[in-house]
Amino acid sequence: MSFNDLTTALHWASAQLAPYADRPQVEAELLLIHVLAQPRAYLWAHPEATLTPQQAADYATCVQRRAAGEPLPYITGQIEFFGLTFTVTPDVLIPRPETETLVEAALDWLKAHPDAVAVDVGTGSGCIAVALAVHAPSLRLYATDISSAALQVARANAERHAVAERIAFLEGDLLTPLPEPVDLIVSNPPYVADDEWDVLPLSVRQEPRTALLSGADGLDAIRRLLAQAQTRLRPGGLLLVEIGERQGEAARALACAAFPKANIVVLPDLAAKDRVLEIAL
Image (cartoon, rainbow, N blue to C red; front, top):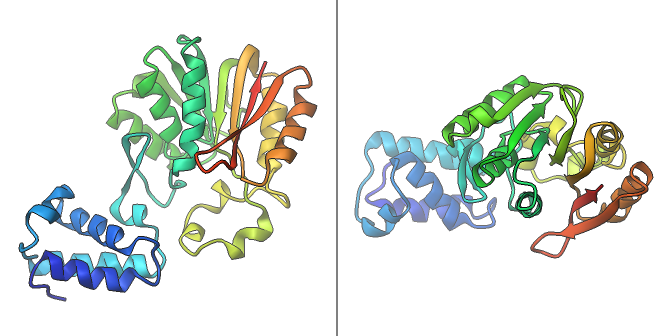
């Protein structure tokens, strides 16, 4: 594959990605700056620049991988979340903007509890734990995950943002590896129903099944997390759990059963969809 200039390359890539991507031009640009190892502004400043034969070949390969259904962040190896850049691999769930609702709720609570101890349950890429550590400099955290490969990615992201010394990474299921009760529990657990797998977009089905699927109604992980949290959340503490947009009523009922004296609300995301279950003791 050869291209006369960057503009020609982008036109070709956009056409290739149009059937598969919601924003083909944007994805074409992101793949190109990945290959060129340049900032996005470079494309606008140098539209006449040419690609070397190796760069053209690499770009064509990246575009073909994306057109085959591979998620863009797995190709580029990184994604932006809460204003920070995170490394991602196929071993971890890709961070999504909806999860920023949970981070914002946690940071609001931490303004009045700056020296709290927190745990990020099912940390994956570490995006939640790292974002909290960066924005709450007195916070001490644990980050748990059942996947050792995911924990390696999370550690690397913590080191990338210079907060690794405040996060203890623990391998295990949900809260089971936690050595002490904590003040704040945050989690983006699996919440997709098993029978929804086949109707998920192809790109989503490239992500770890264990980070997505959670039983017949998608609530199995949340049930177990709430049960474990009863003995691991300190009095006056807060539990924040991301949920599916149609799970608000069911998740709130589970929370009321597990914590009958708590203040329980469901927070919406920016699209006004149910997104975060908040339990305040």
